[in-house]
Length: 99
Image 1 (cartoon, rainbow, N blue to C red):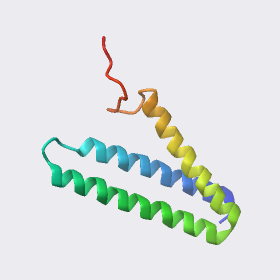
Image 2 (image 1 turned 135 degrees about the vertical axis):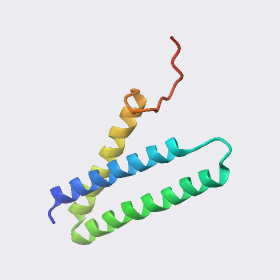
Image 3 (image 1 turned 90 degrees about the vertical axis):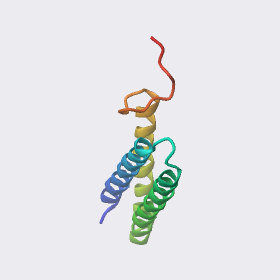
Image 4 (image 1 turned 120 degrees about the horizontal axis):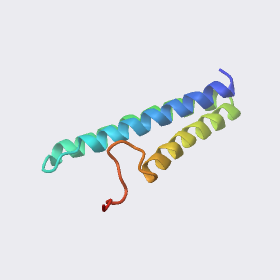
């Protein structure tokens, strides 16, 4: 696969990373400590394996492919951060809104 394909793959992993992180946070419930630990650590492990897998495959293809995958991943993460910071992410706010 050429570097644009790895860029898209990196972005896809970044989007899935953000969605699963958002789902994990939305699934946390007060008082369910074991479930929370399982969700957070299990999700982190799965996300890390997915990201590492794509990056390793991209780097073994070519160095530029690896860099393209990293850039795609971080741009997707930056987009999620921007959505959260601007309050556009569903159900997520950084600051309490007083009206």
